[in-house]
Length: 269
Image (cartoon, rainbow, N blue to C red; front, side, top):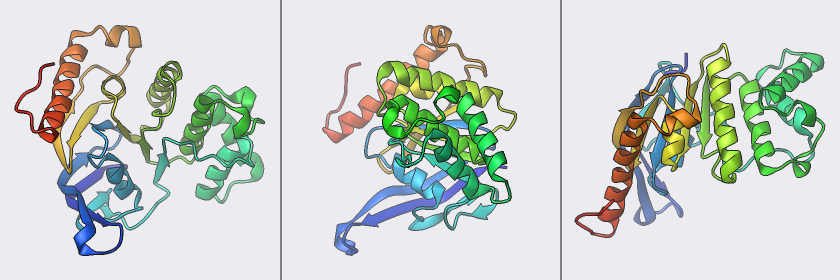
């Protein structure tokens, strides 16, 4: 469960509803993500990454083509998918435990309050916040708030976890800690979830993913297996020659994109 297929997907938006002001965001996208894969979608701002997430979540629908999950066409948001956004989207009037519990109640209406609270505390412990369950969002740092948001998403037990630049607003140190935490959870949970993780950070994409889908404006530029093994240690990965080769290749894609926008025939890296 959790296989994603995009078939000839294009998406056009219009701010006013007029054809004259319509803009093509995605064009003829074909992509398959197997169940249990961790895929990072990498690319410059404005290339269509967040639109892709909205199509997978069912918040927008293709202008043409179709989005499929486990052979069923996406017709709207579903319990099989959960999104973690860049901004924490916590309820300010709920403490950490109740924020997580709220998500569980939406997906598992047959559980008792006691069972919901136990699951909420279990997932807060997984993100290292078992001692902060009673704190409100205003009492938590940005990194802690994002941990609560991740705990809530995981506690909802989705087949597919959609993450739209979830660490983009976090400082460098806490971003690294959150990356390590997410990788540890994905490696150690019994349930192997499909993860689609949007980022513009090359090192983050390589460190986290099984596979990188590099987007240029409107289209997929390349689809690259990472091949660095399942167990990743930050200090080892960043010195790995395969890591450095892939990093340079991806930097080249970014420069290629910039060169085209500026009408430059070549760029020096």
